[in-house]
Image (cartoon, rainbow, N blue to C red):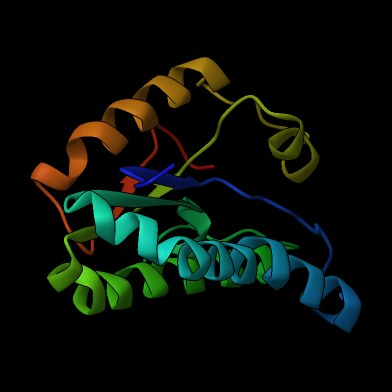
Length: 159
């Protein structure tokens, strides 16, 4: 490719353990997948994103990773990593806007996935994967016309 118009970072790794039982390796893997990999991917694709002139980076976070949302026991590593991804989004929006790169973050709520079932075995998610995928696709194509540097909650329930 000679340019890249859209990058969607939708990595997710979850450890569901109490804070005092989460070991360093689990914490590092959680941050590696949920924060460091998107960082490195954006950094490695920066040249192609800039060549587009109007590209959009969409980072997929979690409703548990934004301030003021309900937090759940056992998800401190996951929520913290997803929170860091949101702050990275805000920083990159300021730093990359002069290159024509917009950056936004969608903080998803519950979706019927294996990872959600693992985190919340007692809950039933209201959205199907294809429903949220359709929303994310539309946002990736059109969202940067209205937003840059935003962390937007996308949730119909808690969790």
